[in-house]
Length: 295
Image (cartoon, rainbow, N blue to C red; front, side, top):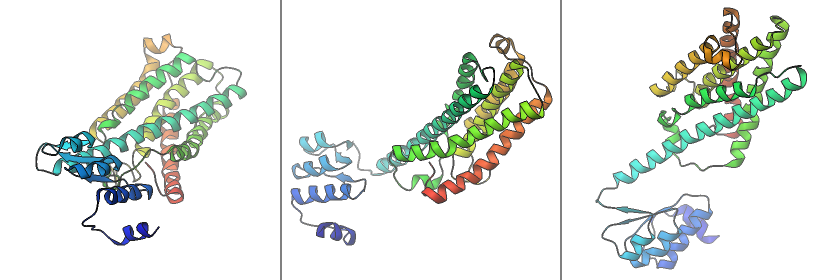
C-alpha cells in the first residue's frame, strides 16, 4: 500500500534493481493502468515481461528482444505514437460495429417475438430476414474506415462485457419500441391486412432505421453537425437505404415475397426512422450521463 501511495506522487524513479522495476510495473497494472516499458538490457527482461507492451530496440541483447512485444528498427518514437493512435482508432470502430450489431439484433429479436405472438402471420419470413441482414451488414462493413472523434483517441479503452450488456439492454429495447410503433401504424392507421405488404414495410423500415441509427451510435456527439462520418460510411448508408426501398420493385423482391410499396408507406418509413434518430439522440445523452461512456 505504501508503494501504491508513492506511485501516485512520484513520476521518476532512479537506481532501481530489476526486481523493483518489475514490481512497479506490476503494481501499476494492478491499479488499472495500461503499462508500457522500454528497455534493452538483461535486467529489463522481467519488466518487459510484466508490462502490457514491452518495447526494445534492434541493438538490444537477445533476451530483451525475445521478451519485447515491439522492436524499434530506427531511433524514432513517432512510430509508437502512430501505432497507439491507429490501435485506438481501430478499437473504437470495432466497438461501434459490435454495439450497433448487437443492440439492433437484440431489438429485432424482441420485435419478432412480440409480433409473432400478436399477429396471425409471420411479420417477416426467414429469407427476408437474411436478405435484410445482408444489406445492412454491407453498410456496417464501411465502419472500419470511419472517422473517430478526438476525445475517443485520448485514452486507451478495454473491451468490457458489462459495458456491452448495458448498451444492449438500453438501446435494444428502444429500437424494438419503434418497430412496434411501425406495426401499430400499419394495423391501426393504414388498417392494412395484406401480409406481403406488411412484411415489405418492415423489411424496408428495418434497413432504413438501422442505417439511420448507425450514425447516431457511431459517435457520442451530434452526428452531421459535431461529428462527420467518413465518406464511405455516408455513401454506403445512402446507397443501401435506396436499395432497401427499391428491392421490393425488383425481381429479387418478388422472389422473396416482397411487393412494391405506395408512396405513403415509404414516407411513413422515413418519418418513423427520423423520429427514432431524434429519440435515440436524447437517449444517448441520458446513457452518457448515467454511465459516463458511449463507445
